[in-house]
Image 1 (cartoon, rainbow, N blue to C red):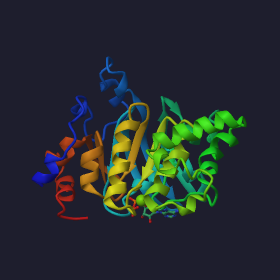
Image 2 (tube, protein in one colour; image 1 turned 120 degrees about the vertical axis):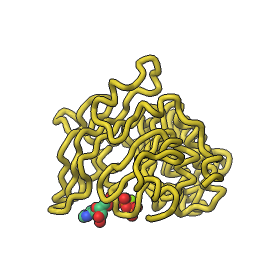
Image 3 (cartoon, rainbow, N blue to C red; image 1 turned 45 degrees about the vertical axis):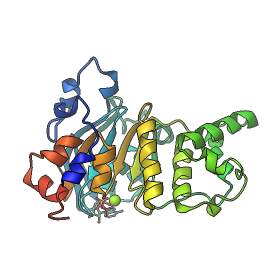
Image 4 (cartoon, rainbow, N blue to C red; image 1 turned 60 degrees about the vertical axis):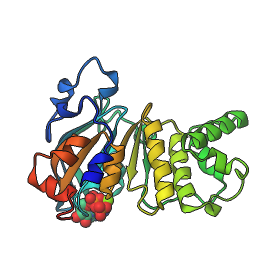
Length: 287
Ligand SMILES: Nc1ncnc2c1ncn2[C@@H]1O[C@H](COP(=O)(O)OP(=O)(O)OP(=O)(O)O)[C@@H](O)[C@H]1O
Ligand SMILES: [Mg+2]
């Protein structure tokens, strides 16, 4: 455990201001002088159902802006389900149902005035299974901006370069932009998927176990990226890797069987959790 603690990132100075499983009043607990700690996503009394099966139970949490928030917990505890609620990807699952409210910048994402495509542009997603399109590196990144109506070649070139740089991939692919993306290594393909998500200029990046199929060097590159990205993005990452959660996140939520057991600054979760079940999980006693 000590090695793990030693590698913890410094706790954000706001850490203890996120009490366990807090409700909407968390927002008012945020220090008003720190713009970077404004709530980006707020979940209020959320229950989620797949048909008759309830997958999330009364979730309350605030994802702070320009921070990395990690969701941890054993398989099947609802991490991906909650992540998919944030950009309404679960809308695509038949007979699924959310009760409660999820807000982005204070606005209910299920409000009839919300355009779902616009929401998914603002709240991008990177999946566990790398999924580049069977097209060139360039076309993978340019696809989203083109869908948004950007046609000028110079503008697209610029977006492709900036996005690939943002994903830490530019130097490795700048000479093969027009080669198939499927010829890249797994780690490069995952960074390409990150570049593709960045190309539409999202405000939030949801990452569902983005490193689980990657080698340690590719994983380290993605972790470095997250540090750089959070200066202008809010990141929510699901990971089964405790060391990774400890290294990269500012806040951590521990889930168990659809419930958010504890949510706090990452250092508190890993060194001084308030719930015995969290302690058992982060020390590897179960899960
Ligand atoms: N499309 C679906 N239809 C029905 N049930 C689902 C569906 N997706 C997930 N579930 C169920 O909801 C519960 C939560 O699943 P979820 O995928 O959110 O868990 P998870 O914490 O991401 O797990 P893992 O760590 O294995 O990815 C599980 O019991 C799962 O079987
Ligand atoms: Mg999952």
